[in-house]
Length: 192
Image (cartoon, rainbow, N blue to C red; front, side, top):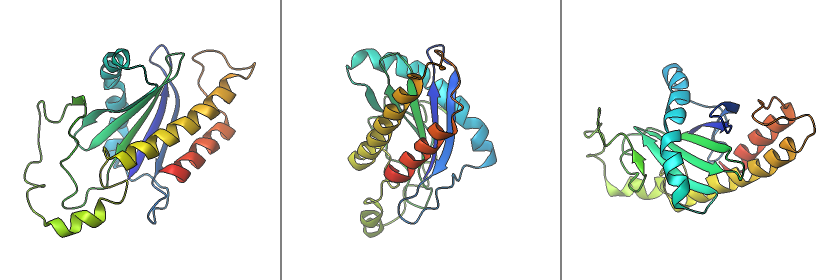
């Protein structure tokens, strides 16, 4: 699974970006986004901000779970008290029968219009899906995946609070700290 993590400031400006891949299940930690997908990640995350602004008022939680789905890309969100948004775009591995799912995602834009890949999920037997469902990469909306993403977000939030408490940090200033980047990468390796 490939991940694109971004922190969005109060003025919808990116404050921090980081791409990484899964380190679990024999992963090497490298993002496997195609070149075209790398350019689209920013647009997908930015377009999910409208959905996040609607969802944030309906719940009192800081972790909003998976709020948007665009084809095979899922966006999870964590809101801070200062209205800074932590967004994690995760793209599951695309193996033969591992598509489809994702019901319950509020902004499922793949089902509201556009191209659908309906022929890819019709085949396949039930025996291979049981072994793939134990991996967090198999189902991005499973409780195990949501718990792993939540743990990742909470650890990043803890490091974020330490970073913004610096007297040299100004509100909505881009974070360029190599220590913060290393801690985000370590949290990604630990949970995702």
